[in-house]
Image 1 (tube, one colour):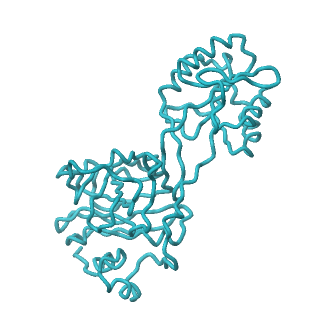
Image 2 (cartoon, rainbow, N blue to C red):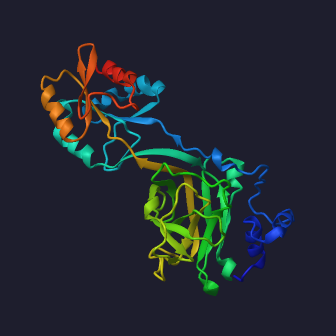
Image 3 (cartoon, one colour):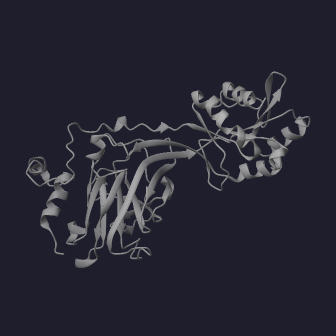
Length: 361
């Protein structure tokens, strides 16, 4: 493989860093690879995080009622899950405790809920159904800009596919895809970080954001590992992203400002930071598919719905309060709110509580 000046020219044209000649050169045959024609520039104000369906967690013996409950609450914007795992609770404002028959100790369950991370998540971009203006933002940015011979592509099949060949020849060793600058910049100041739904090849990649428009401005990075043939959730806190310039950390600089994000980038590099090598790096072909980009923030603690008639209401209320949780208990034809609060949080509608008690009446 030899250095290809045409690839360098294509890169400069795509990212409009070839000066006033960029727009004219872009229309020449062979100067674009994607086949995507951007008829209208993307207005970054149109990228608004969309909250996913809320989830109702139904553990234990009550799973037999899951299908009926799912049908009952679907119109209220809820889905139902019966899975119990060590993963964070995401968009889960309600947990239904089916009682001692489930083999679950109430105190143990409250302790578990108290230890779990709880997040609100929202989808920013679904790459499986890309808007043409979003697709046209992405382009390859490889080590050809410094004389290397690595070559990547952006493909659109079952998501955003970052594929190609990475080589360490000519002192190179990185391939990446990056967006043009967003105008106006993306404002994610109300969120704590990003969430990528990604499937890779076992290598370690970098997720990079910039909060200034300059071509060679500070790049805020976070490395993440992938597994072969397995979809992973990559949650990246904004505060944990490291300011770098050309893979060198820049200490004593301001943290990333998520209220003004100008560009996004995915990279495979033989280097980590400050000369350290990427322990999972392998030269040759690579493939990373990103299905979606979302955002997250810490969510409120879930409300615990207690099924059946509980004589020991005071005891349950004390356990809930000690865990900082609010619960709902059946009371006659209605229900009572007990524990840390005596009112339901605004995000939980009474209609959902009534639907739950209706299924388990």
